[in-house]
Image (tube, rainbow, N blue to C red):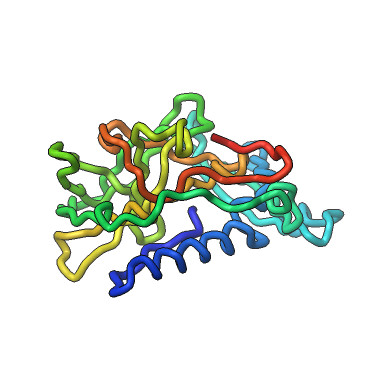
Length: 242
């Protein structure tokens, strides 16, 4: 979903963070990076996606992939196509992503309590007009921040825990719909690490062709999380998505 990944602990966290930032830039500007997505096309009910046929007549810079989701009304599978352009205007105008300076105080250890079974939690999505989609949340993350205890819900993103969180910086210094963070597991199955320096702008902050989950109430912090990515930056007045 996000084209980033968690990282193990390091003896040189500042250097590792700089390397992560460079990797993010490469990923975002790649031929199928977040900035390259120019169209998501959902097909009529019952129609299968044919990427090869959709690719015909497209410029050489365009790739086509397929995707699938569940229709919110019928519950039936819905098929779609995604068009990625390595020469997209967003890539050509992209300068980078602004970020807070690295701060070791925002590397937090938390308790993790696995929940048996395939528990699902409803997440509202940005482009579903208030509708929700249920995502698998395999455990509870409990930590105390600024004297307040939180029980966070991170969902399973292809085997990795992905936290969608909000805080008072959203819509001001950071992306308005919240930010994403991969949760790092430890050797102790009951402990995880949240390195908010690696909080990142979700894919929908780079292309309006994504439909990103938004932070549920339990994942909203009362204080400003001044760590991680802030906003995408573009040249020549190219429209940014705040």
